[in-house]
Image (tube, rainbow, N blue to C red; front, side, top):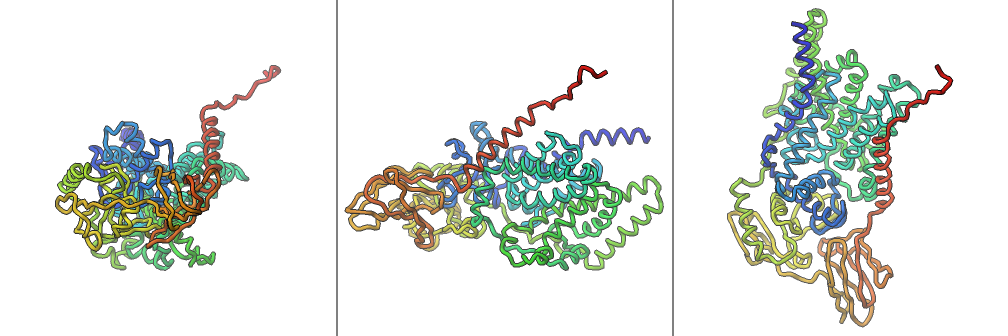
Length: 637
């Protein structure tokens, strides 16, 4: 029987990674037949993917585009990896899968990859079966919360590119110990490439990987041979990852003023301690996980080897970083940068490890009972019962669970989506070429961005966007201003209010309607008797002809960015921002003649791109070249 059990364990170990991937995709099974969630940020990612394909078709990975949020550098809040992957699938398949199908392919890869990364990280400590148990709890029991990971954050709210970054970091951390201990020229490649992809999925990987990896360096230092062996190998992995992502990461960091700042500051250390025993350790996670994880931490520390000790340090270290304590010690508790790096998101990792430690305590009790180790089983049982008893005495989980109040994120019914698609097909030929404004009166709703993949035309999202809140961008309901910004029609899913109510209706279906906007000049000459004529207007290149008695001032109805440059007959023309009715537009002052405006490279973009190209060449050389065999001298026997 023991031999049969061993064979079963071996069979499970062989198939467990595949089972992990299958479990991941079952978190949203409709990805198998091409039906993604149409809720919250999912619609933003779909629209951004359309924009990314237009960039790919013109030979660019990133750049300026009027396609997104009234014009600013694309991928300013989400790095390009997710958008480029969706766009690439759509482009390579010739649109055969459609935008929903292409999105499902990439979303399915994320779900399966997230599950596989967590499984691979936990398997050395828990074993294949119990790692699958922990994975199932994380996928189907943990509901999650805003900025804290879990189903609520990744699937309901659609912040899965951040989840992809977490998964890639977890996979890199799973491979890093082998690199630290064994070394070798190619040992840094896999975790380094994973780190590079993680940075291109979300910049939080920058503050997630290095503290977690530093703990691994400390824990595996002796096994790696002591001295500087482990730190040098860690630096090699970091250099590969940072080099591969440098082409996007460096310009992003240099324009840090545009980074997203969230209103979620660290919690108190006392609240974290109370949450361990009071059922509210992290939102969405069942309260009994905390006490079981405390017992599991002892098991992992004493019996889990180096990986077990690292898991303990990483779990409680991640949760400690969500409190104000370390920043208070450094005198940074009121520093806005702490909010900017979004330390609260460390909960998204800590919660995964907590579940692993909780399952480890149960596994150890089961092993002790099966092996008839009475004293050990009794001690573990008492500890587990004591922890659960304290949790119950503290009140257990609050009514309704520890997750946030349920929110309705799914935008429209299937019938409404079909009606919206029909409305756009019928009214499309009647819309003049130009931007489509999308108006939803509810804040935080990105529902109408569903129209972008159907129309594949530039858009202007009226109302709330991450750009208007965090990036100093603008929005407007004034038809005159919309006309100057290139908008020719407004699509809305609620009755028009205010100035929009006076626009003529082009088409209407159910809750949706399209209203016409009169086109107005994209440039205005502010100098008397002067004329500014648009010769051509593209996303990254604008040509104007100025005529008049002398130097002419021109207002351009497009969002200002420092990357824009203007020239007249080869001479630079200064560009300045101008605040017009809440919009940050651009102005210039030039003599009569032809003026050319081009969107140039962001600060640091060229050297960063060169660094990434060199890193790719080094990685390719290290991966393809064979290690040199030691030569044997002729005199040796």
